[in-house]
Image 1 (cartoon, helix red, strand yellow):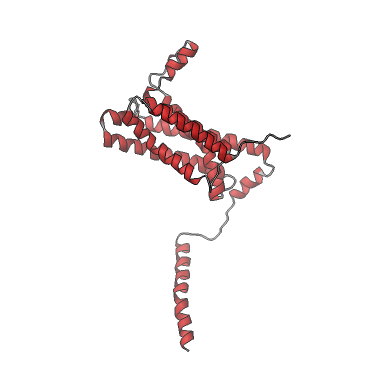
Image 2 (cartoon, helix red, strand yellow):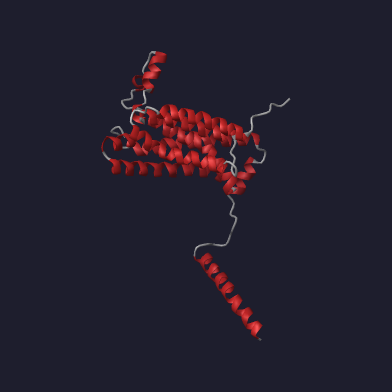
Length: 258
């Protein structure tokens, strides 16, 4: 007998309640209140977006779980600020060994983990969005989530830079979180891209195993659909269509006058 799973909306509501509880708990006494507020601006917009769109676009339980895990991780980073999350002390308390010493790290790498998980955890929900809203198929269902991750990672780095310039001082430095690494932005974007690539390769491998027409769909998605050139040819076609539509009422008026 097949197990009856919790409905998608109830599952979303459960995750929402758990996240709000964590959000409130970690927001009561964050290490730096101003940085916590900055870190949660996009989170608040994202949560409102999910709540507002779930009636028309209800995602899978897998997608909501991945989003939930990423947001929980982000709240830990916002509570301590990413550059000061004491993950090394936690690991040393559990294992008796320092991860940073074992890896030869001299900086706090929790922010690196966050960027990697941004790609790894959110690429699949993005894929579901592109498949169901943009109706992409085949290759583009794997490429566009990767491309979107790369693009939004770059945009986020620009926003971080702009916020750091605007606020300056300790708040700007805490939000930027470079920790003296001049290549921090590039490494963050590379890790997000790597996470998304791994997620899409894993998804493609699973689909190749389960989907009987996987190869055919991939080939179809890469075929040319419209052989007529666009650019100046398309502009001219649109201009002719526009003229015809504008001339049609005048032609009808002349016929009526006759």
